[in-house]
Image (cartoon, rainbow, N blue to C red; front, side, top):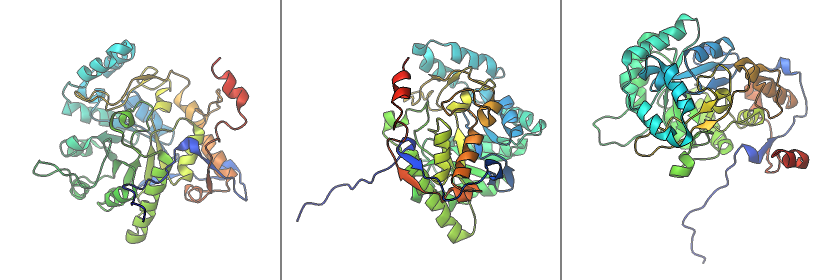
Length: 381
């Protein structure tokens, strides 16, 4: 008898390795319904702007809400540490590459001012926009009541890796069922990549799960820690957990694919893999209204001992409205994301996001390169 294997590995897939199969029927793109729901909130587009300082500030959150989506404000970033965040953001954008990490470590070492949390939330709410905010688990107990009292509509608890059970030396860690009881607003939790963790998180009573560890353009968690699962497989596994939880509880908890989406094709594949919505960072950092001045950096970048992230130059391409709704002035798929989703759905005969979950996908590692010799040979010119 052959010796047993110590570990059996299964194959997992990222965006570039799969393709969507067209349906047997097609429909008009304008007949598709792409609504996204979190508890009592309904958004006309299933797209969320990430809680990163180079992406979301008060003005961006207001604009994103007006366009039908939602942007998440990071309550532990420059917006809540500084009265003058614009000056700090300009300083980060202008810093030489060799000095960026020490500068970010210094910038994010300043204390968070609790009064600014309320002020930023109220500024978003006063405009009539829906306000979503994000904190890390360590500060959740402290900031959740402040955010709820200030009028936040949706509260996200985000970390690189989140589990329903956290073993700690402290007396009591963050307990999600208690958090759900303590603040009367929907709570979205992330990030996770596995069926079992996603199912356990949903059983705590939360209202949404963020899926993805390490795929973000500015994130280096996979290089530094070696942790992560490619997004297609992670989304499929978490979608299976969502469906299982619906069967056992009668409650539908949406999953949000967060990170690694670089163009409309990736976005459409995320929905075909089972996502109810997507969270975007670097694509939105390119918007003229984004606060990062054409740069983007990961939230783990300023870690005092183990920085995991890098400042990348994404450039500034177009207004947010054009990125979302077109017309596209570039051919790389980074504009008219909503048009891409509606067209993909219509090509598959899917009238709703739920129907898009059922379309066929194939493993197709050559999908981005097959027949593209001229494009590939000229891309470096």
